[in-house]
Image (cartoon, rainbow, N blue to C red):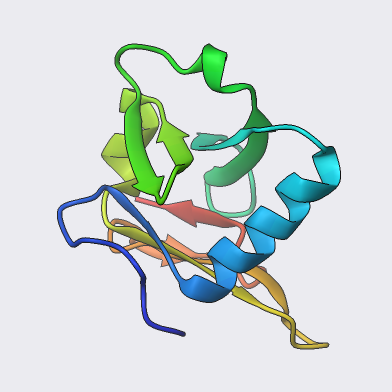
Length: 118
C-alpha cells in the first residue's frame, strides 16, 4: 500500500494513487463532483463498501468531509462508525487491481476485499 496523503485526524484517508485515479474518473464525468463513501448491508461478510460521485450540493450538514486540495470525500455519520480510519488505495495490477480498502474496524474481510464484517 502506498502512503496515505492525509492528516491523521481525518476519518477517511486516501493514498496518492487512489486520489489520482478518482480525479481521473471525475474528469471523465465532465463536472465538479465529490466522492461519497459509505457502507450498506450485504456482501460476503455482512457489510459492503459503496462509492459513487455526487454533486457537492447534495452534501448534508451532518456528513463527515475529508478535503484533498478542494476535492471532497463525504461520508454519512452512520457509515463513518464503520469507516473511521479507513485508507482507500488503488492498484492497477492485472490481478487484484482496483480500489482497495484497509479498514481498521473490520473484524473480517471477504476474499474480494469489497465487503467486511465487524
